[in-house]
Amino acid sequence: MKIITLRQFMNLFSGQNSKTITEFIKNAHVKSGDRIIPLQQYIKDRDIPKTDIQLLYDHIINRHEYLERFYNKSLQPKTPIHIDDAAMPISNMNNDQKTPYKNIIRNLHYSDILQKTKSGLDNLPTFFDVLNDLYKKEIIDYKILTPSARHYIKEGRIGSVFSSYYFRASIMNPYIVYSLEKRVLKGERVFSPTLGWTSYAYGFLECDEVVEYVATDVIPKVCNVTREFCETYYPQKTVDIYCEPSEQLLYNQSFMNKYREHFDVVFFSPPYYELEKYPGAKQSTNQYSTYEEWLDKYWSATIQLSYSVLKKGGRLCYIISSYGCSGSTTCKHINLITDMNTITKKWFSFIRTIPMNNKNVHVTSESHRETGEKIVLFVKQ
Image (cartoon, rainbow, N blue to C red; front, side, top):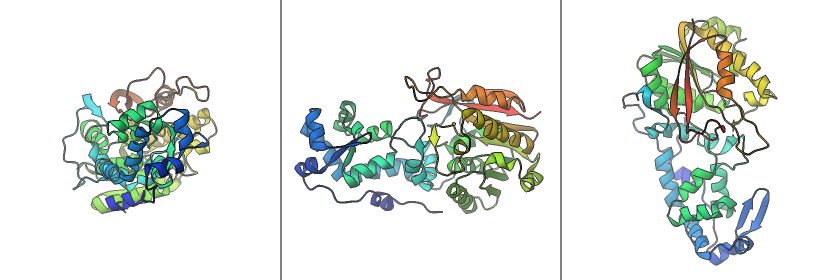
């Protein structure tokens, strides 16, 4: 298990840059969609003041200041890593509370979270792609030069530009998982049909009452890192990590013989269909060509798996949100909450829905604009 250090992180973006602002204006380019436009022409066409370009150039030259702030806020693992806060109340489940618990997750999977996972709805460049272009190639994404972005840069808030405009994979705060286990789920043996970038393992294994954690995922690196994380920090607990699609485990005789009616809790946040494009050919959205097929062959099979491995009275809990594209002709409203819950109710009895605040939820539907998701709870009768 490898933790990236501040020095290693900063070295990712090291490189030679233009030595003067005049040289920068002459050499740099602006990326707008598929077009690469000389900066000199771009600022002339849009009447962008040279003073604004000077501020951006100064940031590039002194990027170590921003990179260090970003690392300390988002990648520096909490030490010790253990969750030492009381579980948050069910009435205030908030993915943005106690965010330093996310840092070790983002650190362990930094390249997948900040670069390799793509937006499934918009042609958004990833956070790392933008920084690599800007710092190492002097290629400026056009959004950095919009009036609103230049306003933030003048205020010394270029980090707000990067976080607002560019894509990063979503992360479940392990503190949410920990709090749900403490307040609601209260299981000893837990199964997760996805690994959630190691967040679920972290949250559950921090709970003294959890003695066994079993999970699967389709990204080999995530499986390996999670396995190493558990061995490093929780050697006293029983952990088994599979690396195959959850819908296929239903037909894995060895797995089913071992774990049929074994678990107290099944917990996960499933893929939001095409909202995020994860690395790996075995992703469920790569296997099934339509939303309807995905619901049938991925979701329905995963729910049947969950039913089969839960004890009677065991609880199924997942976190989900619907989404869509306002004013877009290229994507449609996806009512995940209704569609997925309808299938789940064929197997389980519904208990309740708990709101979860999440200001970083990427795209919501036209009828669901609040910054949040839903924690949905079922029981096996």
